[in-house]
Image 1 (cartoon, rainbow, N blue to C red):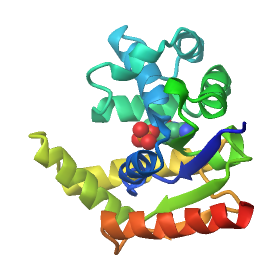
Image 2 (image 1 turned 120 degrees about the vertical axis):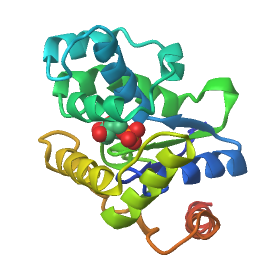
Image 3 (image 1 turned 90 degrees about the vertical axis):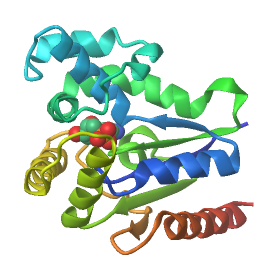
Length: 217
Ligand code: DC
């Protein structure tokens, strides 16, 4: 039986994670936040006082990654996000993380009948045959506001102008890198969340996925 896969791509703070989690719960699917893989590689380097630009060390960290590393504390830190975006542009790191992601989609853990994966290259590289692909995005200003609020709510300092600039820099790196650049798959459902709340995003995604399911049945 083929696994039912929902691929969600888009830039940071566009609402992918919230949507992916809700869809996974709704359909009873396993969920993988693939950004965590790149964050875990970045964090390992930082913990060992190594630079994210050290490609050999980054490849080694990626190859030695274990599933429990995805639960390391500190993965959401801004310094880790920065390191993640640097290692994510390195072909050897992406190659080292490819099989784990493909395998998760093909044979989801816990006997789930399928999986939701979110990231930047899920619909284009990791799961080009996914049954449903969504490209979730929002203006960079809206995303920076959301991220700044998130940081403030968790008790961390956040200056909007700084968060906005960091987000623009990381967007640029994700979009312009030579490998697996952030872009919508040709058959992805385009979901601009700039003016939508999480419930509306979920509703639109469900409508699209259920239509796809009916078309395939
Ligand atoms: O979604 P996130 O902020 O946790 O992602 C962290 C970094 O990893 C970000 O710079 C984009 C990169 N990434 C990627 O290149 N490919 C993915 N499938 C997921 C994340």
